[in-house]
Image (cartoon, rainbow, N blue to C red):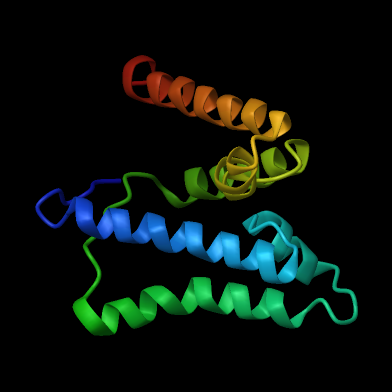
Amino acid sequence: MMIDFELFTPWSSLAGGLLIGLATAVLLLFNGRIAGISGIVGGLLRPTAGDIGWRVAFVAGLVGAPLVYELASGLPSVRVDADTVTLIVAGLLVGVGTRYGSGCTSGHGVCGLSQLAPRSMAATALFMLAGFVTVFFARHLIV
């Protein structure tokens, strides 16, 4: 994946981070829920009465926000340097990891760390370590 650094601005990144923080705080304060994507989507796969509406709205916002942004200013170009099989395997591994880790990077890294949860600190450290090791292998050992 390549990032077009000519279009990167720290202000838009800061605004995005603030919006993520605000959204997670609002969901926790008003709904008592952690904004972990794997848990929210997982709840849609095994729905309980009265618990579907906010989950659908959250996922619709995740899908709809980039579409609205694209209408306003256009999306940056993205190039993924991986074949379809690699992307499918990577997606499955992420799914398995979120089950073993009892959450995903958004649940542990954004929400758990802000609550100083020891489990989230350990999970986030392992996420980062796994990412470092993967990049090292992919960039330096696999030719």
